[in-house]
Image (cartoon, rainbow, N blue to C red; front, side, top):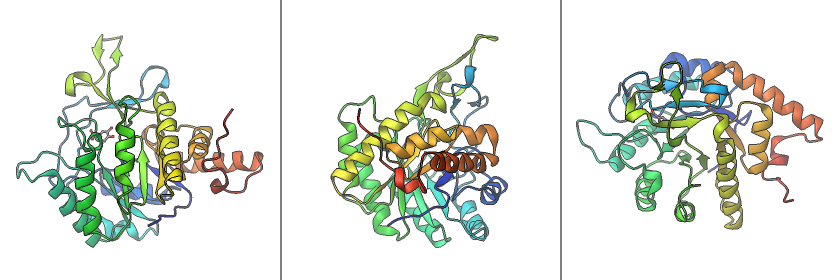
Length: 314
Ligand code: DHB
C-alpha cells in the first residue's frame, strides 16, 4: 500500500515530536506529513540529562541518548483525531521498551498498532532500531523482524513503514533483512536511524557530551549522510531487482536542499528531516522544499519523481 506525500518531506521521528503542541507545529508547517516520536506501551521519562548534544563541533551533527521519552500510546491515541484535522497524513511511530508490566515486545507492537489504527492514524512507522535501549535492536535480528511484521501486518490495514538501522558495518545482515521484508505488505522502509554507539567529548570541560550509556549515543546530521545514501541506494536497488513495491524513505544528514537531492537520486521517494529540524524548527521544511524545487527547475526537471533512483554510474 502506497503513501503519497506532498511535499515528499516529513520530520524524522524524534526531535520536537513528543507533545501535542510540538506535533501541531509540524502540522502547521510545510511538512507533507506528521510523524510522532516513537510511542511505547508505557509512558517514559527517558534517560537522565544531559542526553542530547544538538550541535557537535563544526556542525558535524547531533548526538543523543534520549531513551524514548514519550507520553505513552494512549495519550497519542487521543491526539490523533485533532492532528488529522490539519489535512495531512498522521504517521504514528511505534517502539517497544521494557516496562513494569513485562509485556513481550511483539505484543507491545501489536497492542499499540491496533489501538493507534482505531484512533485514526493514517500509517504506522515501526521503529525497530532505537539505538539507546539495552536490548539489541529488533532490526538487527531477521527472526525478530519477521515476528513483529507478522503480528502487525496481520492485525492492521493502514500502511506500515519500517524504520531500520544502518547495516553498513554488519556483513550479510542487509541481505537477510531485505529478504525478510519481501514477505510482507509494507509501504516503505525508512533508513537510516541514528548511527549507534557514537561518542563526543567537550574539550572545554573534558567531559563526554552526554551522560547516559557511558556517553555513547546515536549520531545524526551531516556526519551520517554518506551512510544514509548508501543504505537508501542498497534498498532501492534490491527492491527494484525483486520487483517489490516498497518505497524507500531517506533519513540521515539532510541539512541543505542538495543533500535531499542526493537522497532522491540514490532512490528515496520521501525524505525525513531529523537534526535540521532539531536545529531550525518547523521553518526547515519550507526552506528545504523551496531549495529542492529550485534545484529541480535549474536542472530541467519538473518533479521529484523524475529523479528518484536516477544516480548515474561513472
Ligand atoms: C531514540 C533516539 C534515537 O536516536 C532514535 O533514533 C530513536 C530513539 C531515543 O533514545 O529516544
